Image 1 (cartoon, rainbow, N blue to C red):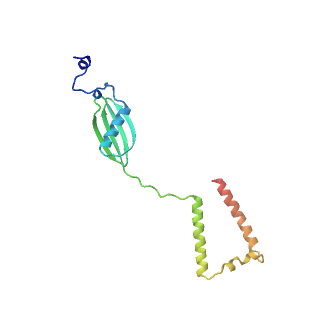
Image 2: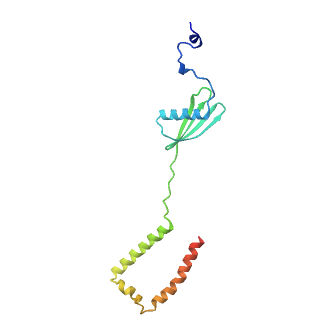
Image 3: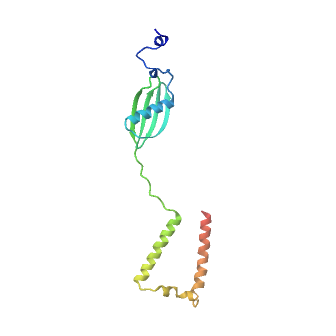
Length: 159
């Protein structure tokens, strides 16, 4: 009889023998991920692994659910698991930026004015006729628009 056979029984293989060390959080998480993979659940990310007495409680985020699995740290067996589905939250509509709103409103106003002038048979030449310099409307309009521009600049720097 050889020395090797007296140390190891014949019916056990070399890879079956492993030292009994306590289960840690990483091994518990790997066990849970393997278990959920065998169940066909796609794991997004592990959330937490905590030791409560002799049981590891591992929480894992799934695609549309959360799984809570309890693993015994001495026997390395899964004692209990639960999968709870998450309620999807309604996403709010995206709010466009201030520049986009101003651009969109400006385009709407220009199109509306064009349509009104077109239906009323008003020529744009009649509207812009005061630009030739013969009228004082250009001076009055310039004086009127200066305070508006100053107020707009002040309002933009304020916010």
